[in-house]
Structure formats: structure tokens, C-alpha cells
Length: 141
Image (cartoon, rainbow, N blue to C red):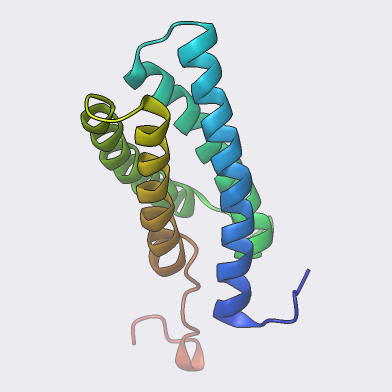
């Protein structure tokens, strides 16, 4: 799927499309946990976040940043977990603080928006970055 774009523009569009899917997953899992199961706001948020973040990694590494099986590795996944953990921390603070002042679903939406921003910046510049080729095979510079 090229969408008539290349490079960074294509990645932004795909990241956004996958983000819409992940937002729907996050929002629905949160609503089910909070309203149907009576989970506290933070538990519902963390549960929904983890489901959506797992989907995000799978879809973005495959489609947005086009990682092959050979390119997938432990350091990349650890970088993803670091960015995801940062997003979880920031969004947890946002949802807990805002839910005391505005409707819980509006607070959740604000938290999701924070997560999308952190996720795209972290993914594009750190998690899925491609290593520059080394000149003449010299890895030390």
C-alpha cells in the first residue's frame, strides 16, 4: 500500500491509519473494562493501553516502517517498550487527573492523543530507525 506517497509522508499516513484502529481498540477495551466490568479508571486504562500498544507494534513494524523478520530484533522491541512505557506513564497521569474534572471518556481521549504523539515521534526517530550503512564495511567509523 503506497497511497501515492513516499518516505515520511507515507509513514505519517499509515501511522495515522493504524493509530485510528488502535484508538478504536483502546477506547473500546477501556469502555468495556470500565463500564461493563467496573474496573477502576487506571486499571481500565492500562489494560486498554496494553492491548492497543501490542496491536500498534505488530501493525507499525509490518506496514508503516516495513520491517522484515530479519530486521526484527530484541533491541528494537526494547526501544518500543521504552517508548510505550513513556506513553503509558504520561497517558496514565493525563487520564487520572482529567477524569476528576471532565467526563471519563473525554479524559481517555486526551490520554490517547498524548500517546499518539509520543508514539509517532518515538517510533520514527528511535524505535524503527534504520542504521546508516557503514563505509567500506568499517563499523567503527
